[in-house]
Length: 284
Ligand code: G1P
Image 1 (cartoon, protein in one colour):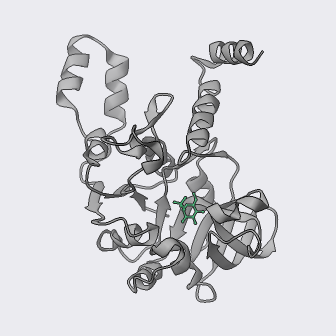
Image 2: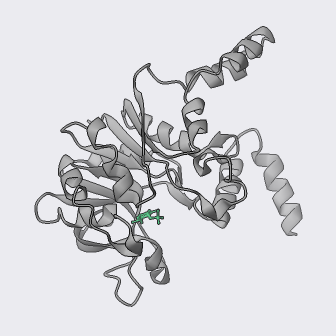
Image 3: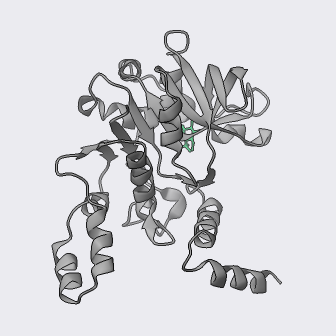
């Protein structure tokens, strides 16, 4: 039902300097796979067939990652390393289904998404932020499975004092999984936050959102916010939040990134037992 997804990958990743000085933060690996590949696989699992990356300068490693690497493939083939060869070949998408557009300046998430407007037709599109890594079932698939039109965000309950780090929902009816969104505000102070229901970086947005983004209005932090454009659609189109079943890691923070590596390591058949024992010894 949702055939296209946008991946905003133009951010500078300053929180991970010096690691991200010459390497995009989306290429940071969790165990053995870059963050962006997890997001792309999650979207593909939900039926997405066209992948739109909103990149920036110094991000060409992402384009190379989703392309053939002839020297590598030839070498692996010649050495009979079939498993590794399959790994690098199987992740390639159909020719012509991966698109790149540059966000020329970092003017906010809303601006990044708007930069993809000419590649999005008249259908709803998914947006995935690779910083938000989700362990377990595909969050976007869960969203698509409950999608009945309009705009949709993935949500999770966060400690009240953390509302300033997220888009926060003003909830209407809430059955514990699906919450009707009656208001949405970007990074409110806990004292004024309408709830502790936070937006996680997974969205399904309608083409009308691009029309709102075209006004280029600045919001929190002086940036063009996707949250604000979505909020303007309230009352005009259905808007729901979905509490997803997986566990989310904030890989935009060093601690969240480390936690993700441990959690994904413990989830990996080849290293679970050794990592578990090592952690046990280490922690006494
Ligand atoms: C972005 C969005 C915010 C959302 C968050 C989820 O913020 O603007 O609404 O809650 O992602 O990770 P960022 O973390 O990029 O500042």
